[in-house]
Image (cartoon, rainbow, N blue to C red; front, side, top):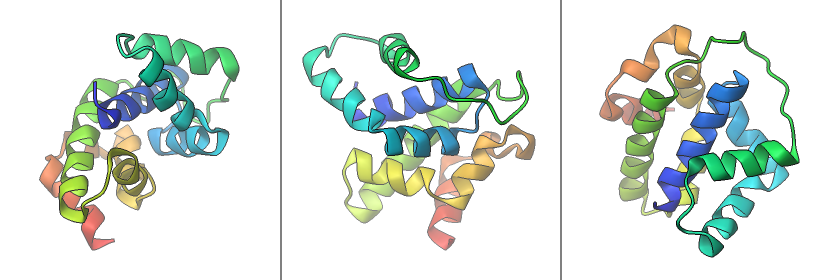
Length: 135
């Protein structure tokens, strides 16, 4: 699994588990050093799946929810969308996986994708990419 897919999968899965918008999960992971920890651990255990990393993060901390339980139920769709948008950002801006993840999750558009009430998770990756580029 490439770094982009691992980071996005962990963020979106944890977002779903804890009912926290994914842009807030990414910021929390970033501040706590979890992204670096996940990527370093992947080097030691490349065969492990997303559940392993989520268990590791969940065992270290408990993030409080600031959204209603059951509100974020489309993490698989958001994961696929975010991974594709991050890939487009990487190509356009010649960034590595982590830089492009940061650009995506720190955008206003990612916050809208995280809020499932907006329906942005249903939009095409190119449309989300264009919205980020216009910010």
